[in-house]
Amino acid sequence: MANQVHAAHILIKSEEKANEILTKLKSGASFEQLATENSLCPSKKRGGDLGWFGRGMMVREFELAAFNLQKNQLSAPVKTQFGWHIIKLIDSK
Image (cartoon, rainbow, N blue to C red; front, side):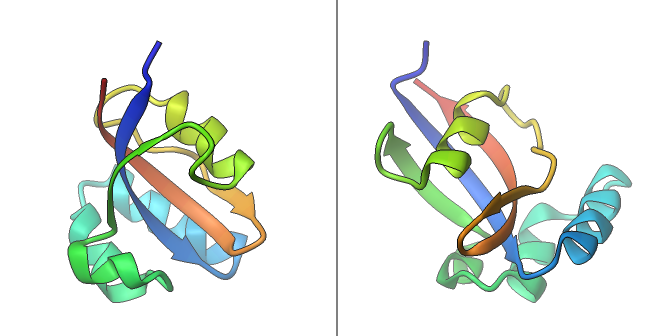
């Protein structure tokens, strides 16, 4: 089981907009570009890249989703107190 994951995300206020972005991603749109253009998180300057993090470092819903993804897999929209996230797992170790 992974002790750390390297993930990126796109943070959106509405579930509807998050689903729109997810559809674009599944059609081959650039994750980094959509993160830069749409994300509400400061990580958008890095294409949504959050770097490596371990368990207990993110809010629970986000952590559960991130640690359950396979490499290069996208999450369904995940709701936290910050809004709706689309998470992409870059790697795990």
